[in-house]
Amino acid sequence: MLLLSIECSTRKTGIALLRNNEIVHKKIWESKDASSEILPAIDVTLKKTNLTIQMFDYFVVSSGPGSWTGIRLGLALVYGLAIGNEKKIFGVSNLEAMAYEFRGEKNIGVFLPSTGDSVHYGFFTLPDQLGQKHGKFYTCKTELLPQKLKKSRLITGPDEKILSLFYNTGKKLVKMDPDPVMNAVLAYERIKNSVKPRNQPYYEK
Image 1: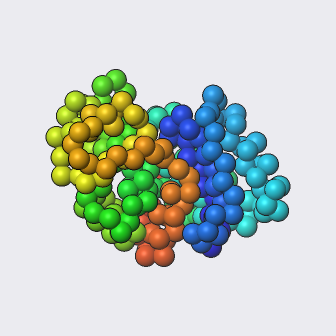
Image 2: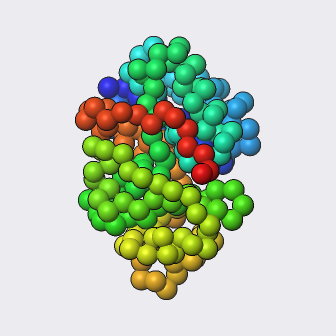
């Protein structure tokens, strides 16, 4: 199974090509204008790997949470690449994909900054199960996050200031950004297990 994964829901933009769950190519960069950068990056990547768009079985995209503009851009791109064939489009939540990176562990808290003083978060008791079913995630005021994730053994997210809320709590802290490879790995497991994609964007609620 050949997958092309796009992540542009945050400032760090990325693309990845995977064969099953093995990385063929990966590129991540701090984006100034993702709308003008992604397609040229995909074109260069395809030439380097001697692949064509027609060869891909699925196009994986982050459906959020994150930037309203970035999420819409990613979805529009994969619909274009799939030539409107929705069966080839597989959306995943970047929060779930980040949590799935810690499969084999328990009680994982994941967060992504939202607008203003809000934050998106999820608590996943058994991240392994995300390959078989969807998890849940929410939005709250940043100051409430320590209470929301008080049962977490490990906290991960991209913002050091928010991570600092958990200093001296005894929890393991891992600074990590959304990643197109993590998205594709979760998508691959869900495709194998016939789990439906998350193709509807998630914005702040």
